[in-house]
Image 1 (cartoon, rainbow, N blue to C red):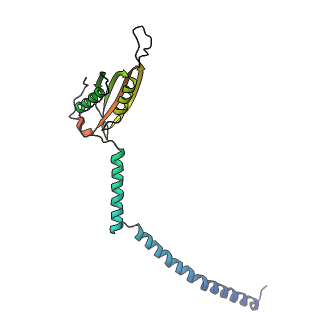
Image 2 (cartoon, helix red, strand yellow):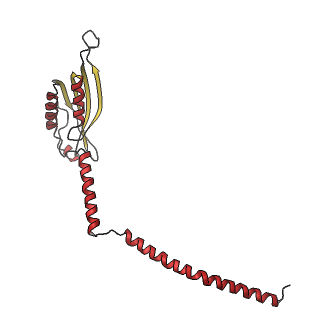
Image 3 (cartoon, one colour):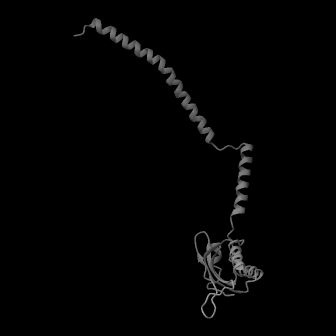
Length: 193
């Protein structure tokens, strides 16, 4: 059994150790807590939007650059369907390429959330380089179109043999995009040219 003579010095020593450790750690912990609070306040301050002129100028330049990039890379969706204008443009382009044997048909427009789509089929016959150039130009029209299907075939003679003259028949199905609100004013059905 332990006597009180031995027990008291052990307790006293334990209390001194605790006070000493507490005296060393408490200031560090307290100043760390203050620093963490200041860091939190500074992080909040940094996360707030700044309105200083340099930042506004930098963001304006960044926005202008992104708008220019959009204008370069994006093909616009026109507000109006303008099938007649598109067919005139296609006819002039095909005339320029010497593709006089052709048929252009349109289908009924379909309404989607962000744009309306009108199917159009272009059937061409001509020399392969002219037909290939026509496909490239159709894909590069100044309005948004998507080539949905492209079929190329060599023309056959009356006997059924393949004609080696270089005349190619192309069947191109494209989708012409336009703003959805103009569908209500668009005519249903197809037109032929």
